[in-house]
Length: 491
Ligand SMILES: Nc1nc2c(ncn2[C@@H]2O[C@H](COP(=O)(O)OP(=O)(O)OP(=O)(O)O)[C@@H](O)[C@H]2O)c(=O)[nH]1
Ligand SMILES: [Mg+2]
Image (cartoon, rainbow, N blue to C red; front, side, top):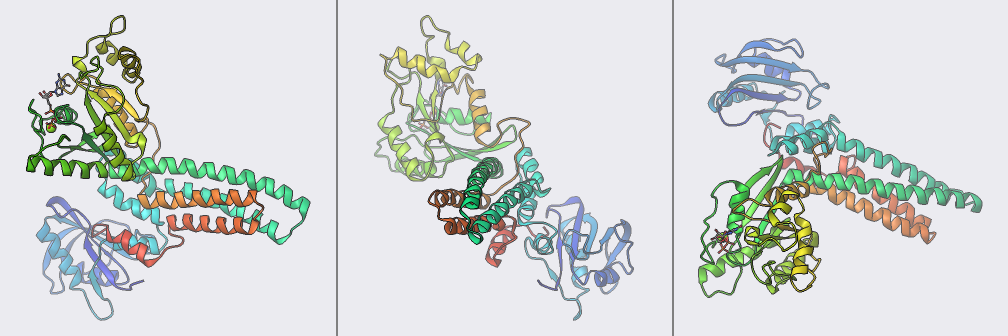
């Protein structure tokens, strides 16, 4: 690890009441001697003037000294809390750099270098270090809460529990290999099979929560798609609760992608309105439609809109249209899952109440919207709606019918099923490692069935490697470069 002492502004680069400059490394005591002209009582805030090497005062504020190893980075750390202006903070950084000498090289910190040092000095594991950055970048309360749980070790403890289960399993399998006694082997194999099953279930649980954590961190990319005039822009405006996109009764109004971010009960949702897809000879409209196809490929959830008041029998049509099939195929080819295509029947306010059944408005109020599909199918000469979509909802962008149901579906898909649910912050890298662990466990189960105990032992070794990579017990310098390079400076 570098023996340089590093310095950086740790607070935002916009003017604020207070700004913090942080120094970490072997030369911290030397910086204190130059900048504060005196020593500090460890962990006590002291009001001091901050000087540069020529003795000029550049600011005044609180100085706190955290001797290593009990500091954030594990090294000696000095925090200077001065005034939060960019120029004054720059002067404080320059004053620290002016303490530079041959014995104590001091330089500006690279992005994420404080956290990287904390990781390399065992103050944080890799999941926790990543959570520091995710907590800073969190755009919603739920994402911040999840990142904090990971920073406090919530996710790491789950991974450690999986690791202990794996170590126990490996011991049993290795014992079987070392002392092949048939009767003994049978008993051990029974126990191993049960433990493999339990481990696989535990990995599934961790995967499920981590998947929600990823959705919370990254936000949900939701794309509204469909033919012209079905109300895509109207639905975007209704969800955004403002006039983001132009709405007219002219088919082909939207020409370009329009993005707007909303937060639904703590979940960040990036909505994209698109140009209606149809055959057209208009060059501009065709370019817009091209962009619609690109947006489809990037979505987490596709809201496929249709006009509920269209024939047949004003049910909005049943079965899937050729356009919907084409959109679905493009989506699946891009790696999207079938459950994330939601069929949204807009303009439900124009539907007449079905004879002898509850009026559609009342059904909305009772939250029975998803059951409407069955009744609509009955009204439309018994045709059965293809069950290829994940969610079907009847909504009205103009009256607001069904929008609360749509919001709550988005919220669940975006990471939170209920208010009290525990979700830890996670990244795609974590999901990949957990998925690889699960795949090795499954292959291990096959080897056990085939009595290939050597191969099982090897699979378990690989699975443990994936888990170690998560917490950083095993890591490559390249991986650290990618992770810490994306941090902000001063973290
Ligand atoms: N009655 C009713 N009319 C709606 C509803 N949603 C949209 N409309 C009307 O349908 C027309 C088209 O709405 P838009 O939101 O522009 O439709 P679009 O899908 O964005 O259309 P393009 O941009 O052309 O692809 C407008 O006249 C809207 O007022 C609805 O829920 N109920
Ligand atoms: Mg539009």
